[in-house]
Length: 314
Image 1 (cartoon, rainbow, N blue to C red):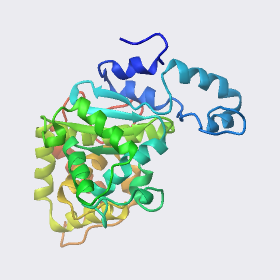
Image 2: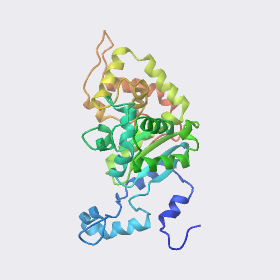
Image 3: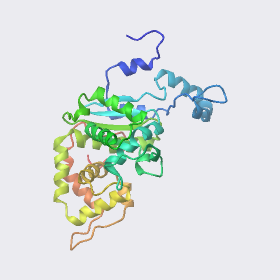
Image 4: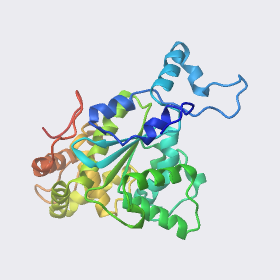
């Protein structure tokens, strides 16, 4: 049981992980970021950044207590309707970056994938992954990362160790290579702006479905395998321009699902055109239309949707 003197956050941590819709998760993400108490302050306490919020300081301080936001707790939710996908909501962007950047570099970076970089490299500007507002992975991916870190003689840092503990409690046996049907994880943070929240949630939820739904995953692979070489090159060029390892085929397919199902403006801005003979030249918008037509019937319900937010599928 929980003793009378213990903080209310303990109750949240000990309770079974709830299921939540994307709209529910969006509401949590739109809450203010919260940070752990500073160790030393000249003002005798407070939460550092909160002071900048002026007249809202009192309201946010109250929310901090009511919502169990201690600046350290990672809130977890199973995705309602796709209950092998776990959302991990970090209390702020910095906590997200510290816990997930090295993993995403290991999985996706064009020059460092397969290698565990030094903790000192986890900073914006060094790796694209350090500025991600969302990360996706299978528990088995984290197990490979942790194993490679040990092989290279690296310790997991405290944020990564905490993530390992969360995964162990939600995905029993994952550390030994156990892989449940459709296991997938999405990590993001509180305190993003509205556009970031909506874009991140829709994009990352398609990755969640790539892990969770075999039919959709197979359809995505099938489209990729039948795609002409010039169109594959067009897609690899787009991913490469965003800082992904475009030589990784599974990454190409997984990102194809996430970007082509949920993006519009980003694809238009990437004006490159594939080369080829008559009828072969294509823009990403043409590839998108073909892809969505091909996979749309395989996107399982509940489909990722947020009120007022664009998706390429109906």
